[in-house]
Length: 134
Image (cartoon, rainbow, N blue to C red; front, side):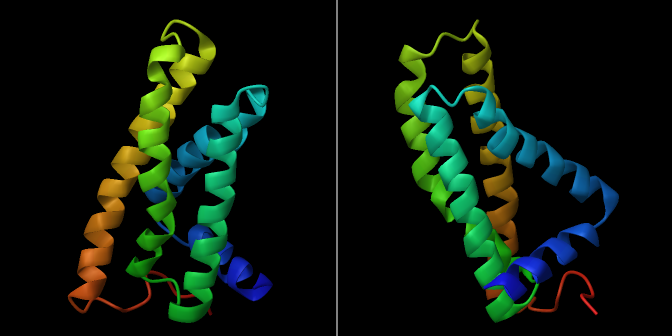
């Protein structure tokens, strides 16, 4: 398990700078952001799904390498996003937590779009590693 985590993190560090910046934004919203709102259940759910996605991506990296299939790791967001959407009427948009939840939803939705494209490309035969982990 830990070797998969190590390979996954090493792969992220070798991605193009623009992709790394996108990953920093996702990490800030899904890992750091929840720490500011831990008294809210939504923050705990976001943090939990982020950790679960990290574990899934580490396992996928270990089994399949650092490939486009990693997009499957965000499958948990397919449950997270509807859950957050159902909470929106209880979370004022003009409060910090309301802005954060909506930012998470926007960024994760965009990321899922990238993930779908990557997984489809993998399924169609683009299975080479995205970066050299050597």
